[in-house]
Length: 145
Image 1: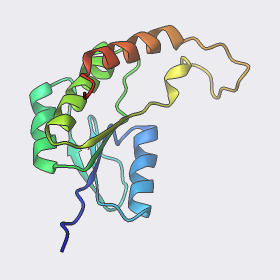
Image 2 (image 1 turned 120 degrees about the vertical axis):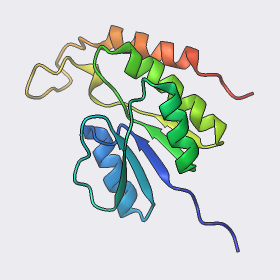
Image 3 (image 1 turned 90 degrees about the vertical axis):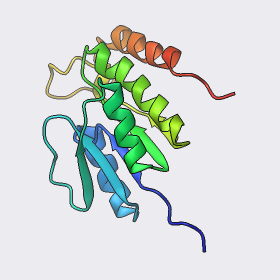
Image 4 (image 1 turned 90 degrees about the horizontal axis):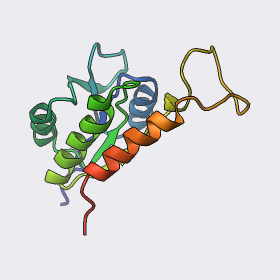
């Protein structure tokens, strides 16, 4: 008999994208553990855990305790290097420590967030900052050889 698969861990599960990822994971029948920083949303069947991804030891402790098969990092705080770059690095290193698959994603970081909605005609005001944050995260995260 093969062991049951480990859970999916959605870091930043309380954000817009994270909530949808947790919902879709549950609908697909997966066991989902998700993190929040300020408050856990009401998504049924999700094991919510408080996490500040800026604190490397907390990230490591959570991932060692949960032992996920997959970690999805959807955590993002506009213009916050410590969350987006350093936090992403903490998540990646902890995921590697338990041999979990890792996916880094983001959604609304392209625009400033000042308009009610955006389409293709809007100027990409956040591209430079987002590119720097993502570039730093990718530079800081070791690539498996």
